[in-house]
Image 1: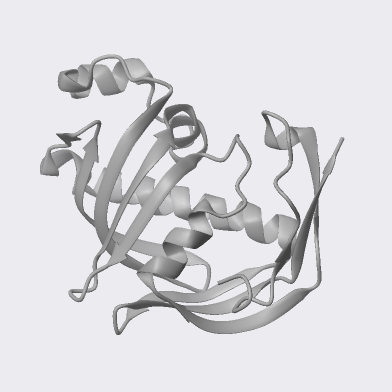
Image 2: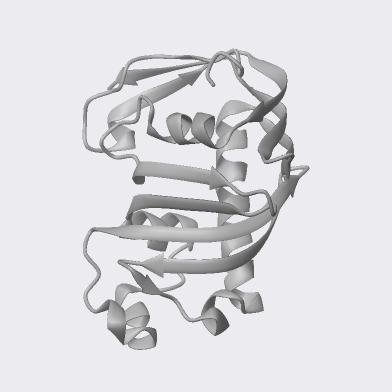
Length: 193
């Protein structure tokens, strides 16, 4: 997958936090590529530091245009970065008592569809399960939940684009593959501070 992106990545940095390293990105290049489920799975597991928010990722692109993904996910990352601190652990426990006390990382399953056009995400969430407990559909299919998910994606893209000069013109499912058009850095070097 890295070769399809013409992307050179350094070795995994040591340290417990992203802030332990300085990130230096190479020149931005245009890309127009497709990825299979296996290539995406490899991408999200390859060369990732200990502080990476998701581990043991597996992705399946279905013929119906949906994506299924499973991973061990950092609860704090998703609450603070993806959901912008909008919900606390206590609020989640109150809304979904079956989840009890959330550990530092959880087993996460999600089935969804959506796309990115001109750096803006759209999504339809079919199913979410945390620690094997399916989240009620009225919670994940509400306009508020969809807004939180798409805003989280848009914020992540905005930060990445600001740091790297990248653009995401199109990310969509076509013929059971992810079609990706845009521009990304040609390399990444992480230097220990």
